[in-house]
Image 1 (cartoon, rainbow, N blue to C red):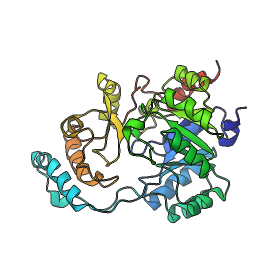
Image 2 (image 1 turned 45 degrees about the vertical axis):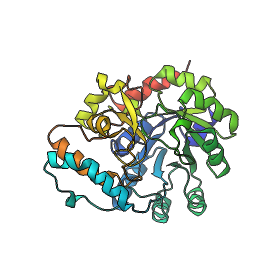
Image 3 (image 1 turned 180 degrees about the horizontal axis):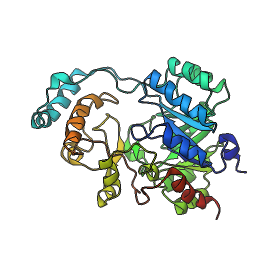
Image 4 (image 1 turned 90 degrees about the vertical axis):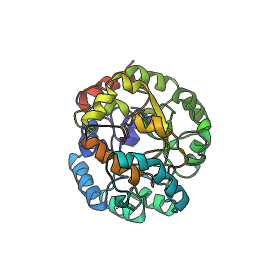
Length: 347
């Protein structure tokens, strides 16, 4: 058996990527039941919701991964907030919305002592992080129950940093990947590489297992990643149209249309670069805008627009997260999607 399989407790070294906002425990459990590692995204879950989801995962009796963000909450920036509101004002007027109703608050909280205490009740086998690693004392609490810790690296330097600071394996996240970039040492997007350029460089640089992520959507992609030295793969976009995903009807339609061929990195929806299908607000405001507040403070103002537009059947302001390869976004069970991907390990 592959060493990573033993560490993750799975039959095949495949991780269903955590995808906050488009999945919950149902997809994670279905993937784990199929012999790979299902992932529960936790960054947007309040404590009560997190507990409820963890209880469902625990009842499944299979290994699973829980994923958290570990960003630093930014200070408020009045000038930037004003510029952001001015940029969005015409859209608010178009939809008859009042900016006085924009909610306050961070929207997404980083991994905390409270998170660690709650997790300790369940002791998940695998814990993964995005945007680096939590503070050493928090990481020590996670490792105290024997959790296997993963985190994403988008450069060789980040992979080396993760290895030096306690990650048990590194996810090499290529530029093709959908959703948020995991970069944390540098915000310079020109330093970002594609998966099959990044992967062999990280494999050569670190001693811990390396998991390839980004643009891998079928058995051929799995096979290619393993040939380049990956210990395993992580796949997200191919699961977006799974029966067990909570992806909206409009998002599914975009993923299964020609629109999915045009994605871009954008900071408009959260304040941090993330890859999604290009829509109206990305065309008109960016896709990268200097006015967008730091992550995750951009979320609140555009969130009201999103809700209003979606009620009218529009995705003009919706984050249609997708990697660059949505070719395998099939309407199928997670088990069927997983079976097709697992074929890449047997040849």
